[in-house]
Length: 103
Image (cartoon, rainbow, N blue to C red; front, side, top):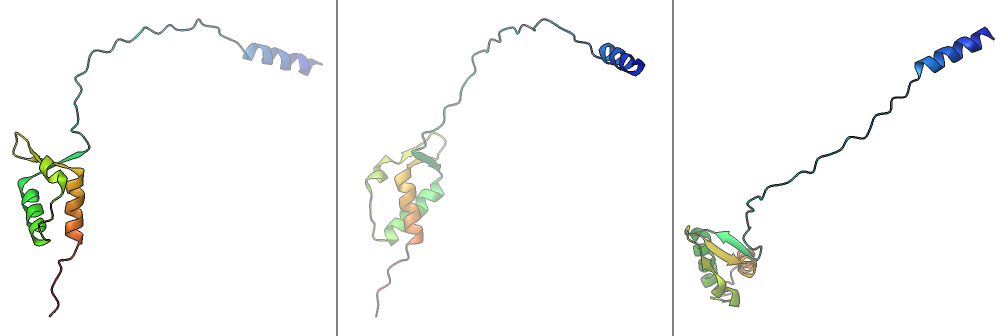
């Protein structure tokens, strides 16, 4: 019986519960942030060398024009905005071998 009293005495003195009030969070006000607007994903920014290579490939493959060729725009820094269709056409021209006449 003494060991039960000793155990309960140690058990009840070792366990204590502390109750504290909940902390209150202050509201956070975010300042206006200057947002950077991306260039539309329908266009890619290329340099003059890319455009020259595109025109050379176009001439080598029979000067095949697509309607999106007219949508190529220049930027103030000397680069060009090219539509996705022109990029795909460029990739097709690179991967298409030149037709060679058979003798």
